[in-house]
Image (cartoon, rainbow, N blue to C red):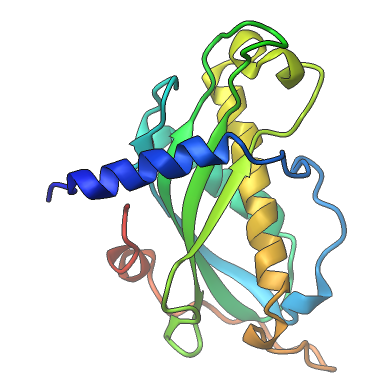
Length: 208
């Protein structure tokens, strides 16, 4: 299925606007677990990137590499929660910019990533937020990115930086909606298994 020119233009505009935003805090450090997530346990982390829009002046990345990078960071951040209620995180990569080499301190491009996120409640068997939530992140500032990550980092390093930041942003967004998550029980319950399959979630996760 082909996307309309209007959709592509809108996404390109969003990517351009993302480059004007201030950089978010680094997601490299996990920080403390968020109590707002209650009895959370990560079931599936589903990432689709096949139809992501590539922004202006960007390196090109294979969709499978985006999927692997973001999935790894979701598992790293959310796999530490040891609740007994399974929730699934579905992410559609909508667009990205992986900065190319520029002129340091004058025209050093910034890397950016736009995703749409849906949270699933395994026990309820469906989505918590019917409308995907859009998140935009920039690469974190560092001694390398200040002179332009296109000069100092590989595409894989840029993707990891953005993947870490988007996973952290998803965690903050989820924590801002504590009523979505069941509270931790006072007594521990025995282990159980997730009932929703990755394929069932991916089938209802728009890839653009």
